[in-house]
Image 1 (cartoon, helix red, strand yellow):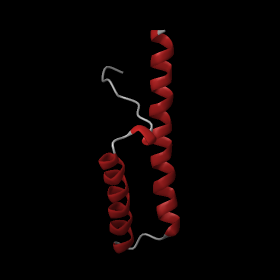
Image 2 (image 1 turned 30 degrees about the vertical axis):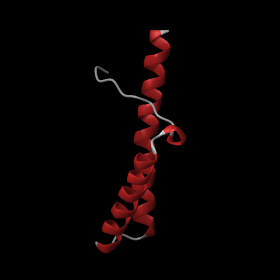
Image 3 (image 1 turned 180 degrees about the vertical axis):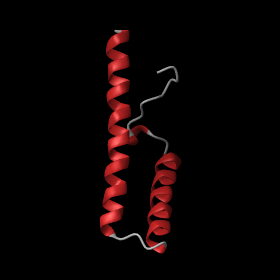
Image 4 (image 1 turned 90 degrees about the vertical axis):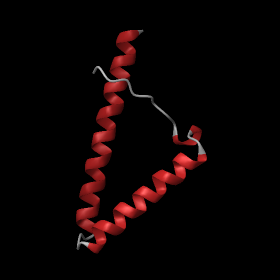
Length: 68
């Protein structure tokens, strides 16, 4: 991949970034619930998001191992 991404541990993120992530997640959840999405839909969305993040992490690790 040509774009650079910085890998950050949530524990090392500035407090405002952690708060922003929490607010974003709650807002997203409330929006989906208000539009009629149920628990099964929310779990499917959550699983998809986790899959996308996992793919990014794997890609980042492969890029790092190639650079080493």
